[in-house]
Image 1 (cartoon, rainbow, N blue to C red):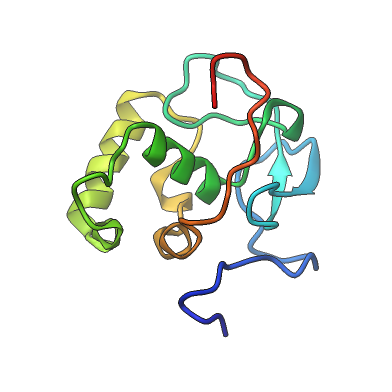
Image 2 (cartoon, rainbow, N blue to C red):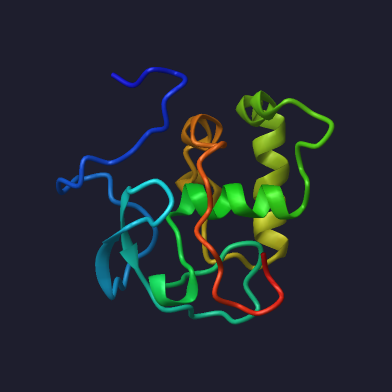
Length: 131
């Protein structure tokens, strides 16, 4: 059992709860949290806020990618992070995903993991103009 103050990290062992998407290129560890996930190629270039990616393009697991999105938009500058537990907040993000033609579904996000892992550092992005 994880201590609430400790990041949730994967043991590296195969897990039936590997997330992300079908059509995986490989099974890889997220560079931020270490969770096993499926590495995939993007299929919709216009997908926002989340689309498939691979480690070469700075990809992360769905929970870390969602955390990165939240930080990019300063979503919790004035609200407690724990607000992510509220169903009406999750429903609003589901609408954002739908309107943005996201390649991820909001049901794939583990909001508790997002909250617990919030303070983990992000890997440096390889794209110009980002961090």
